[in-house]
View 1 (cartoon, rainbow, N blue to C red):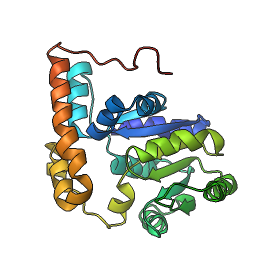
View 2 (spheres, rainbow, N blue to C red):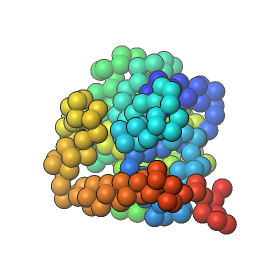
View 3 (cartoon, helix red, strand yellow):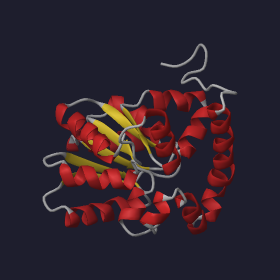
View 4 (tube, rainbow, N blue to C red):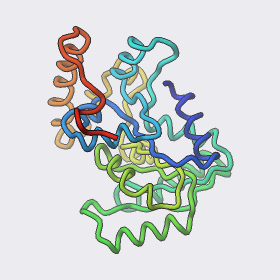
Length: 244
């Protein structure tokens, strides 16, 4: 798993009509999956899970070796846009107006790119009318890829719920990529990302929203991975009697 391998898989699926969703999964997603068997089934049902976050990239390289690297949602988005000529895109996520802003940014950055629609879902639970309106927009646009920027675990649940019903091929959850690529949020410098400290940068930028994610999930993940690496505990992909 690395950025190029992930982009190759996404582009091949989009061009080949292979339906599926992609979960860009970091420590937060893994922790949610250990807590919630339903969410774990969503991750296990994905077409592709990527190593979002340096801790997962380091662990994957330790276990598997080879050319393993971080596959970060904002980077995956840029990689697919830069290489996926002819693929059509739909942007779904962000606060009001952000998807339209992102459309303008991406069209300026990648001349000729085909963005066939945008949508900003409400922060409340969608009503049947909301669902119909979005389904109609997707049906009219027939995008190859729907980019979903709702944050974990909301975006993964959203993709698993709607992809089977929509006339779209691939859905990709990219978290804060909408805000990063429109300049609404600052990204951590590359050296901070490479040393695995992006979580601290983001916590400093959004403490009220992210403190629970990082100050509870990160220590819990370290505790669990220590148990796993020492052989004290084993974590099955699916709980007994459950799963897909």
